[in-house]
Amino acid sequence: ELKVEQNPLFLSMQEGKNYTIYCNYSTTSDRLYWYRQDPGKSLESLFVLLSNGAVKQEGRLMASLDTKARLSTLHITAAVHDLSATYFCAVVPMDSNYQLIWGAGTKLIIKP
Amino acid sequence: DAGITQSPRHKVTETGTPVTLRCHQTENHRYMYWYRQDPGHGLRLIHYSYGVKDTDKGEVSDGYSVSRSKTEDFLLTLESATSSQTSVYFCAISESIISGQGGGYTFGSGTRLTVV
Image 1 (tube, rainbow over the protein chains, first blue to last red):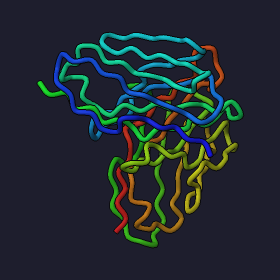
Image 2: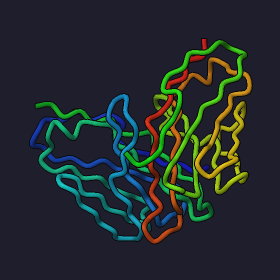
Image 3: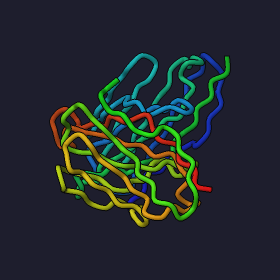
């Protein structure tokens, strides 16, 4: 069964702290996406990671991909309140070019 | 926005009635998808399309049908709505899942459907 597991599923943290969200997947894949969703809103693309060792950074967010470990991380540096949202990772299995398999999401609350 | 609209944005319907949700894009993207989002489940693919009149089932397709008669429109029909189909439905588009640019998805704003 194809699985994408995120942890933690819920994270409450203080502004200024660092933290990492993990995304493990069970299938062979070399393509992983991170999305952000604000409450009641649609999903916004954050990062596309296309190869082993890929690292992308945007502001206080940095994503990386280790295809051998089947693991991606989303690291938050010096968190600010505006980063409060739910973050999803999704992978494309190697045997499917059409479907993303999604994690359940990590709800991140950053307290001022 | 990226040129993808969903309608209606909200709908309340009765059990047993048919319901059609519309996704319209102005990007001329080949691929279109319907997802449902429920707490604790992330997004689950219902159906997808890889061209006009070319569609296929996703992981939760039972009770749903789709049609794509034009590149820009992808319709999702609940043939006989049930309470378990109460959910938020998202349409997404992508130019190419295997393109060098990454093939990321662009999502519509969602349709909140309540079946009573």
